[in-house]
Image (cartoon, rainbow, N blue to C red; front, side, top):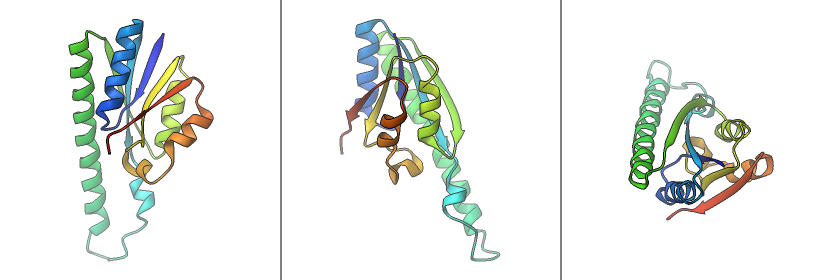
Length: 146
């Protein structure tokens, strides 16, 4: 059995994926998708010469990298404590849900993710609904602490 964890900041989803991998002797892969959609979302810099757009895009890029490092370190730590081997992958895309679906199509039996799913612009979109409709494998939504 192969399990894919769509990474956000949900400790509950991480714990569920690690627990399932441990109980079933399954392989675990954690996927973090860097959100590159902000440049399209905010449009052009209407304050000519102010560099406001560029500064904001730099801020969001740095924030994405910070979230990536925190999430990857956290899943590695939780997997190691449980004695579960965990492969980590990072990809960059404007369409986070599409990247999760594309990875899930690589032979995984189960996709684990938080609901609500909190990744960049996906907070504003309905990623779980889109993923559920298109997922090529079973999907386990883990309710996150709100």
